[in-house]
Image (cartoon, rainbow, N blue to C red; front, side):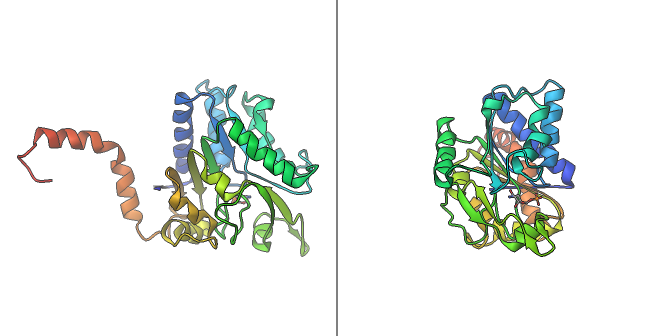
Length: 272
Ligand code: GLP
């Protein structure tokens, strides 16, 4: 895992946008998995800026929505489909046929979820999965106690998540159910970027990064992912016990070549 701690929200979004941009330069038909919520907003704005500045072209990019409320039409203002359309898709030149969404009103739930999984496989898998994290450590809508090998399926939302997403109105929780990519699905992505900002995420980040791998904290599974990047601001990183080490590793990660060159020049003459 790479733990990247930036001074503030804008810098953490810049880090994520930079990685996505570099990945697109290597693979223009990039396949992205896209989370919703407040946290990734700055990343999507950064991608739009790259498009507007002519530095990134989305015409070959494919996008998959991470999750969706059940019972909301795609054009419902509260749906995640509307969120991604409004926040990102309508501002870039991604092709409509390359946008895939979980359907809030599927004909048959299980079939729809299986078709979603098949489509992800057909395009060669997700290259970069962008995630936020719930205060209870959920990723997508994989709530605590979700199987760590789960696939795209229906889930019942916790009251904590409904409250955090502003969906408890006068004690009435609406909607209660959602469709979400599973943890097993997420784990098959090439790279996972988990974004976290704010003190309300500090416990979830500490437990996910430094706690045991447990279904009680779904994001902790990312400790097993070969290329997982946790990109946080200082507030969200505030409960991490090894912050200095993570910063040290990040500050020195691109200096290995110079280090080896120096060592080979002094081979046999100095101790490390
Ligand atoms: C919802 C979404 C998650 C998101 C989480 C945190 O539950 N299903 O994908 O990561 O909320 O959202 P925010 O970034 O607004 O805190």
